[in-house]
Length: 338
Ligand code: NAD
Ligand code: UD1
Image 1 (cartoon, rainbow, N blue to C red):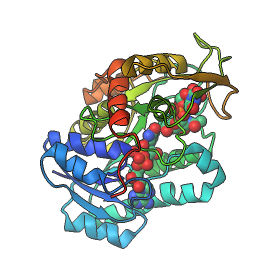
Image 2: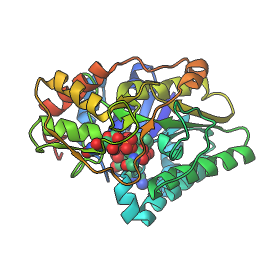
Image 3: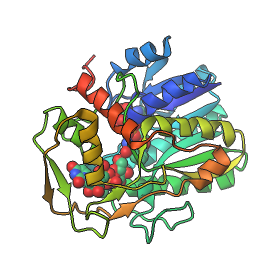
Image 4: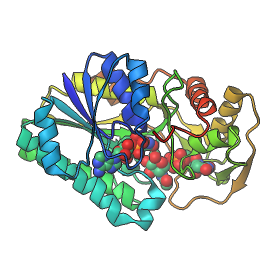
């Protein structure tokens, strides 16, 4: 089966391509390289043992997308392409709405023309806003607290309406919690441009000496140690969740919604201490004020995915931090330019 992977040279997309190949699928990558580097491709090839088809294109280009979908005989689409930095979305909301919303609408329009009716969409736990309690199940109320979150929520709503009007389509919304870690080979990993927004890449850059210390955003939350608690999930487990969705609900018409998380919450201090163990160094850190828009705690109830997709996260905190460190220590500056 051929799977179009939009955003396939990005962090989650590249790891998912590896797992797709392992599971016997043929991924075809489309990416405009706005947040990834072409040098990811030879690394995917090295792990997979063969070439992978890559097309540099923008998902907002409908003609190009129709050509690709038809020309490559695509059976289903996993749509990772989009912009993901919350702070940047507050400064540039239009760019976010254009890439994330217009991009997805153009893609489904192209899929409709090419008569391809299976889509898996990268959503986020951000659609739960500030949840009233944890763990979070899929039927919790949704809300947006920033333009990035709004773009995910609007796309979810558009896809829900679209699927209602086109009941023979299979559309799966996967709500990711906090992806961390890297491929165990150390060849693929997370390579943020500029100063990392997310905790784990920041910690990894401190460990490798690129940054001086980690600022912990708030130590006065009502959590066990006062720092924010999240559901960190190994990116390889997340990748496997996509394969499980393709296999178990991909062939079933309907609108399918799943949390992809581990069901465990770890605090910022837990993560820093786990990383210290993995890298054998002390990670300097300082307490700072809360980051605007942050919530105290957020973790998933992943039981729906376990039941329907026969999937659950397998890799523990030790593997998340060990793999992240392997990637960061062997690629201190991230991927090469070309
Ligand atoms: P990423 O930035 O590493 O990958 C996204 C890829 O999409 C990049 O390679 C970028 O070049 C490409 N892209 C962006 N706009 C495009 C366009 N218009 N046309 C073609 N390619 C385009 O991000 P990621 O961490 O791999 O995230 C993948 C998806 O998962 C995103 O939709 C993101 O919002 C969602 N998500 C990510 C996280 C996370 O923490 N990483 C959490 C929840 C949801
Ligand atoms: C953030 C986004 C969320 C997005 C997710 C994945 C915000 C408000 N939320 O989630 O919408 O889906 O990334 O990309 O940006 N922390 C520090 N110091 C740091 C960085 C983070 O203490 O330098 C803390 C945060 O306060 C939080 C935890 O670490 O408690 C995790 O932060 P982060 O990795 O940014 O993820 P989220 O905030 O959960």
